[in-house]
Image 1 (cartoon, protein in one colour):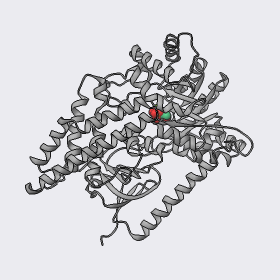
Image 2 (tube, rainbow, N blue to C red):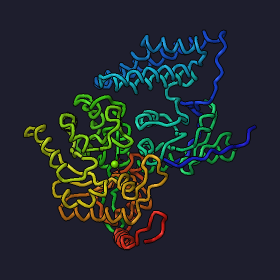
Image 3 (cartoon, protein in one colour):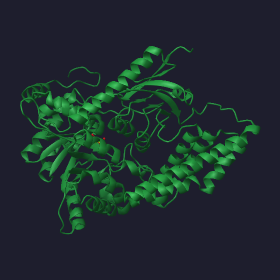
Image 4 (cartoon, rainbow, N blue to C red):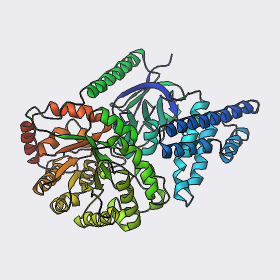
Length: 545
Ligand code: PEP
Ligand code: MG
C-alpha cells in the first residue's frame, strides 16, 4: 500500500471531504498515451452512449420542470439535451477518438470545450451564453463515460481553476473542490463557502496528477489534499463529515429562534445568494431574506450586456421562494475577476460600467422590478463612489416603474472613497450595505484574486466601517454587512459592536451565525469594538505606526 502523501495549498472554504477524485483538467505536460487503434471503436461507442444518456437525463429533467409549471427553466434544460446530440459536437468527439486515440471521457471534455470556445466568439449574446451549457454537457457526458451515474457525481472535483458559475453547478453534488491555482477571495471561493463545499486552492500542478477515481481526503480548513490517506485519516474524515451534518441539522431545528444577543439586542440575519439552491438552503437555516443577490455570476461568459428577458428568466426562480420577504438584488457588478469577454480591457467596475450603458441599466431594472413583484424588493448598487450615482439609478428606476410601487435603493460601501463619503451617500439612499471583501483589499492594497488572507479587523478598515455605520444611523437608515466578515468568528462580534443592523452571510453559514449571535453580549461587543478603534494602524510590514 502506498504511503499517505499531503499536497499543501491554501484554505478557501472550510470542511473535510472524503471521496473519489473527479479530475477535470490534466497538467499540460502530462502525456496520456493514445488508446490503441483496436480499442477505439469501443471508446467511440462509450462516448456516443454517454451523450445519449445525458440527452435522456436532461429531457427527463425538462419534463419534470414542465410538469411543475416551470416552462422557462424546462426550455433551458431542453436546449442542453439538444446540444448533447448536436452533430457538430458528436463529429468532434469522433475525430478525437478515432484520429488521436483520446479516451471517451477526455474526448468529450475536449470537444465540448472547443465547441464552447467557438460559441463564446459569436456576436449573439444568447448563443454566447450557451458556451457554459456546452461545457456542462461535456462534463456530464465525461462523468457517465467514467462510470459515474447521475447523483453519484459526488466526489472531489480537481481542476486547474473554476469560475464561480462552475462552482455553483458542481456544488450540487460535489463533496469538495481542489484547485491547482486560484485565491481565497476570488468569487469561485466565495460561492464554495456560500454553498458549504470545502475548497482548497493554490495546490500547484501536482494535484492534476491525481488519478480519476482515486480516493482522496480534502481538508478545506487546513488547506491540504491527501493522496493514499491512512486508515486513521479516513476514519477522522468520516466522523468530521458526520459532525458537520448534525451541526447543520441543529441549525435547521433552531431556525425559528430569534437572532438576539444575551442582553436583548436584535439583529437581522439575511443570506448572500446567486442560485435557487442557496436561497432554499438559507431559508431552511432561518434566513429572514436575501441581503445580497449577486446577478453577474451567470453572465461571466456573455458577449454583450444581458437582455431584460435573460435576466428575468434568471431572477424569477430565485425570487420565487422569497415571496413576502426581503430580497436585495444587486445590479450587475462586472469588472475585476468578474469581467465577461465583451468588457475585457476595462478598468471600471460595478455601477460606473452600468451608468456608461444606460440601456443595459434600464434593462436590468426592468427585469428586477418585473421578477420581484411578490417580494420586499431592495435594489443594491455595487461599487458606489459618489452620491450622484445613486441619484442616477433612482432616475432610471423612475422611468421603469412608471408610477408603480418603488423598491428601496441602497448603496454598497466597498471602496475607501465611498466610506469617506458615507454621509453624503446615506442621505440619498434607503439603506447601506458594507462590502468588506473589496473594502479590505482596497484599503490594505491587497490583490483580491490571489490574496491568501482577508484582515478585516485591521483598524484602518474598522474605522471606515465605523464611519459608515454612524453615517447610516445619522440618516435614519439601516446598514448591513454583506462581505465575508459577517460570518467570520473573529470579525462578526466586532461588527455587531460597531452597531451594524443586519448581517448577510453565505447561505451555508446562516444557522451558525444566528447561533453565534445568541451567545454574544452586545454591551461587551460594543466596548471591545470601541477599544479596537483606538488601536494604532500598522505599516505594510505589520509594525505599529
Ligand atoms: C464585497 O465586496 O464585500 C461584496 C459583498 O461584494 P463581492 O464579494 O460580490 O465583490
Ligand atoms: Mg464587492
